Length: 165
Picture (tube, one colour):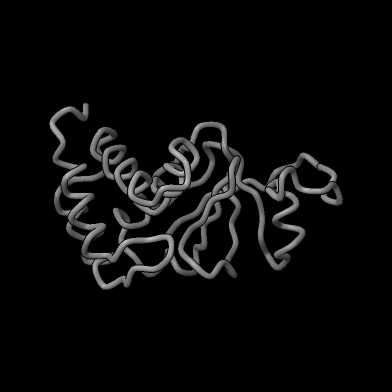
């Protein structure tokens, strides 16, 4: 995986109280420590492909306990885990977390947003969706997510929706 980055040069007060319990990217980094850093909007790359999520920055956190996550206003990616999956899966993970930015906390909605975005932008083809399903199908459901096999079936329906342009 190739990640292009430019650490943010803007200093912000990281001692301020997070708004409604939601940290800024700088506050998140000051909490997690390590080698975390901020990639400005439009500068994050996955395998040479620039990723966009509006004007939201991406925080790189190799200690994150998942492939990706999101707080309102920014995405978090773990390149250590992303290195283990194919390009379509990486881009789907990013688009899924971006989906939370635009569509809210619902996981099904974020899944659908991601595959429809991929189809619309041309980076997700049927073969890539098959890779995503292979990746997600073994996942067991939890309080936030349906089982991987259910998510795969739902994403296939979203991907095939003829109204997506």
